[in-house]
Image: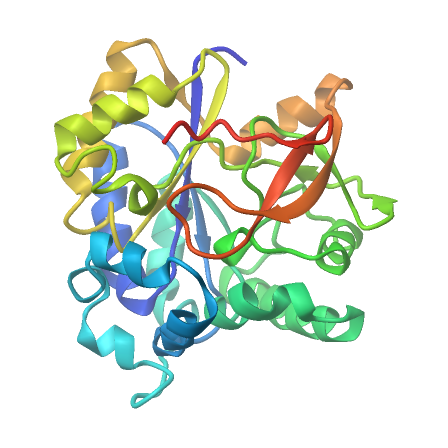
Length: 309
């Protein structure tokens, strides 16, 4: 797959859904490109991330670089603590419909984003099944069809979840950091559910490290691109707000350099049909610029990182 970019849009918050999604849809329409959106099916409990100050090394440093208040806003940071968390998917059915009506893919980004991110590693089979049952039911309720794809909050997954998604007929899942699509082994079992990893760094991992303006950050990303498949995860709370200029600059530069943009669901179809997609292990690890653990693709005993930060 030559000079291809798949844009994976993660919605983490209610405000990101309400304001960031329309902004990104406008950018994609302007350049006639299609992306894959992943939305939490439950409530926004962003305020509960405060505990990461004490549990995730480097969290405060990253928060300082990105600007937590300007990124999320005071109200969002109170959801789940002092304010009840609003329903992200159920209260934005028209936006969900707009995503698909404009030709983009709509997948699932957990139920409670914070709970999944912080706890899925420690969930047993029963607790995992309970969590997945809720998110699949909500998706079918609000969208009117069964889900075909999932992207793990915080790139955190466990083997039970992968197996349950396979059993429920999902086409692929995007839960890891790595270099290329693969069929995963996690624990003792190979799972025939295609895994499409994020191959590029996320903006919050490089702001203040690779630059702090649209041009320098775009240049950094252009240097990170390979001549094959590249998967970029953007966030509605960043590129859907004040960093939209960066995303547009990057898209312009990528198009001028001969890159095309495709939805992850279409990319998945090609890799599944190819018959030569590799099998790789998933292990918990770290990536530069991100606090805490993420799930990583392992190739020949080493994490497959193409994040040139």
